[in-house]
Length: 175
Image (tube, rainbow, N blue to C red; front, top):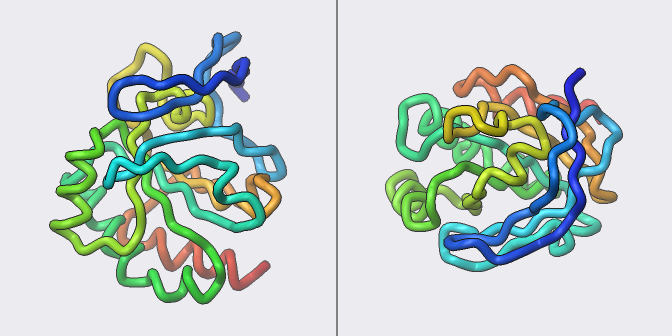
């Protein structure tokens, strides 16, 4: 499996804050049980959201290629439509893309999403294998279910947009 390792440093960059580091190998997805790297990104309202803010909470971090495109819209709609199940399970839903906060705000408004969409300059996506350094400027359609201790509980390498919310909720229910 390909790996990327970074030295953690959070710095301000344009529209958001991002995890920076020197890549030592190509990007690879995280494995179950691995810690999610520290991250700090701006949401669609411009507010900074960081991993440390979610300490003790579970969250689904779904990476999507581009706001308001067909597959991303379908995936977001299913997460929206099943949002009550995530809330009941104590899991916060967070979308992540390379889109600007303004583009994400338009996406939230158009689809009435009850969850935050985060803007990444690519550093987090590269660190978790959701994008290839030097590759196209969009994330892969993957997700991570992260537990309250900041460790990956489940990895979703292949996501079918219309089925993703149900798949994650089934995994949450199964333990």
